[in-house]
Length: 359
Ligand SMILES: [Mn+2]
Image (cartoon, rainbow, N blue to C red; front, side, top):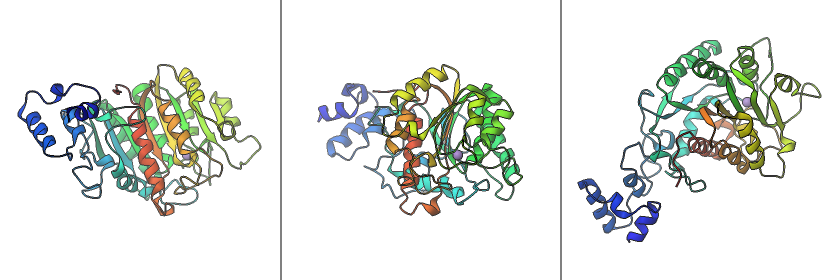
């Protein structure tokens, strides 16, 4: 039995966990009664928020929060927070991303406490909670951008790292306004089928195809430290990514990603990003629509989920100051697997934040 406990506690000795306090003694007693003990919670010592284990609490029970974490009204006291931005007012084609945060929360009930692949222990490292959604104005995109910017100013002022659930990609613009206000121009790892650098669409400056053009215009990005990965699809000209390259961005078209591991690419990206602040923006449409069909503007021949995970895990060691996962559109997600993939990618993002402990 003790060897099992030791194994589940990742090699640390049993007395370390079950020594002094009455609670710890109770834990040991409960463990002796049977196998259905939430060891990860006990191991954490509850210093940080830890989701209830499905060994104890049915996955389908409870009010859905991201990863079944506690809901908090604000980011105060948190190291990282999941926050939803439920809009699709900026979408050019299929709508539905306004339902993304909700569905990601529902599907996130599958998430457990540890990352078996990287041995990250997020809930022994950081205080994390779900802080709900930005109160958006679904009738007015500009007002929504103002509301997002103000909400993120407050979140960032606490020192908390936001992990955002979109929402269409428009939201990256006001989020980056708040991020750059705090950190100055940031590096950007942008994973997407599209560059999202259009200037004006149907006469509008704000939309899900324009956020990174606006960010550059406002000096929010350190352009030499921007990489766009997974770009593809038919374009309005023969070189759709000319503008990005002219700004100094590194453009990695999807053809450069086909049939290979992206781990070597990410080692180059880490060198490009250096030690300065970095924002990670992941559009789920970067993945092939065979894997993630529930999205607004799908393009064929995309990244695999494995490559998506490689990109995020490749961000380990970067000075990440914020991350988002956008464009999950549940009405087009007939199996829920797009939202499930989004939830898992957000968990992977949590697992590469600074100060993460790995066993
Ligand atoms: Mn996008």
